[in-house]
Length: 328
Ligand code: AVI
Image (spheres, protein in one colour):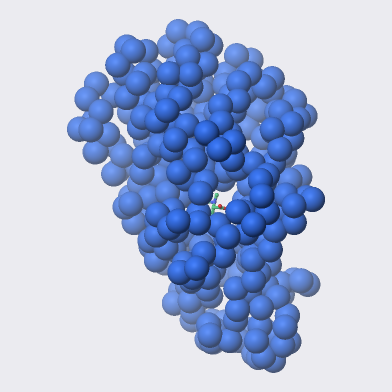
């Protein structure tokens, strides 16, 4: 998700527009209403997420960056300890800012590996295929554009080397707990014994710190959420009055669920595609996003319950974020 180059919008292919349209209608016709946060990331959403990562309150990116810059040797050691040649696969590579530190270290150590970034965006993949050989001379890179699991299967068909799969940025937190476990289980099915996962997970901490990260003073998160309504207007010919919806972030320290909602400020009707009417009651909410937070124990439990063995946990200096290494 972290990109400096623009991702293609859903406008680009009829298939993705159709899927976007179907998902939006299904979500807004559900009770309660919901939208899928994976649709936050059109070109404007990408820019807003970049802004968010640079704002004072949104800590996860900097915490994980600290791990990748300060604990590079430990990260590399855990990976290299698994055996000789390997494919280093990154799910949702974006601009690979964090992983670049690890890639550089592995190249300097003369580790025998190929980097296979996987991203849904063709722009991201061509950007990485072109820029990384310049910034990281000697890198072997083979970018794969497409869905995570389809591309993992493809990666397995072109190489039999052991796999190390990176899934960073606490992207796992954007799935509800059961869904996240399901994701890890499917990931495990795509791997063989001895393969590894390096997963970045945001941890439970002072609830005020978490909530502030999703309720920044500048209002970037607010705009990030509202942009999805604007995207629906732009791409699906809808007429959301965006200023009639309010951003409402919540954090439950008991469950670790940080959730964002948009609240309808009045009784209103929205037309999508010029034909489909959706009614909103005053104070009705749209469930927009979950950013689940975990304890270290829960991260280990998730590994075990989905068929992995937890190997290492590397934390930033504040103990707010973990990069965990699991073995299949
Ligand atoms: C991409 N993902 C891990 C971010 C998060 O923290 O859940 C997206 C985000 N949503 C609001 N702020 C950032």
